[in-house]
Length: 315
Ligand SMILES: Nc1ncnc2c1ncn2[C@@H]1O[C@H](COP(=O)(O)OP(=O)(O)O)[C@@H](O)[C@H]1O
Ligand SMILES: [Mg+2]
Image 1: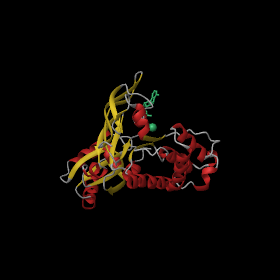
Image 2: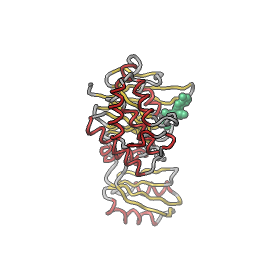
Image 3: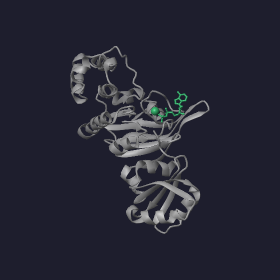
Image 4: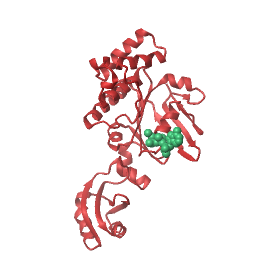
């Protein structure tokens, strides 16, 4: 196994006039959970589709587990598992049949398939539901089956496209647990995509912030957040926001001010939120800006997204 589970340089994918991704670089160390975090249309699925050999890039190159995704696509397929954003399995099959057919596709012996299915049913706790038709499954059960399918071939690198999209909080946390265990106990390398910043925060050892087909920032979540400053005072209000932001930026203890035009929020980065809140409110009182709502917090990955893209990450 190479040191990097995934590496990509200058990946571009065009569909006619539309550029789906526009120069994606990646370096995912083996044994890492890496999250591509970005809004719908950012190019996450396109990136996964290239890395999993489903489509070819217009330009650029990538290697997965040391194999080139274009020149050695077959080798790449032998090393990876994939779970898709839109789960498309035959609803009339049972969970066991879905897994068994997948194993057959990869020419696993029937003994191997039986052993593997037994393990995976335990892992994702589908239990007796494994012999029911998929159409009877809840959304969470379908996601767990999809995760098991991705693991049938004991991959070294697992790709998860929006693994918890549409799930309720309890099921999301359940899936997060399986993902963490796979990484921790088997050293599996994972690349997942998500538009949920809490998912990236909860799971990822490293995160790539994706917007308009590019990775605009990359690193450990803590480091990306810490680079923004100590605390952020988020002010929502009405009136002359631009003037208010300028006044805030002039205060000596303010590191930086950012505005989210769509959401009408002004983010005031300060050395200490609890100490500076009163001063911020005081400075606001003489302005044509009426404050509706103020919160003080540590910056989040959502703030990192705003900082690098100029707009908010919304579901
Ligand atoms: N097969 C395709 N043909 C044309 N445009 C596509 C195709 N696949 C994706 N796109 C476009 O590429 C952009 C990125 O899409 P996608 O990779 O699915 O983003 P994400 O997964 O981050 O939501 C979007 O504008 C999307 O409409
Ligand atoms: Mg997608």
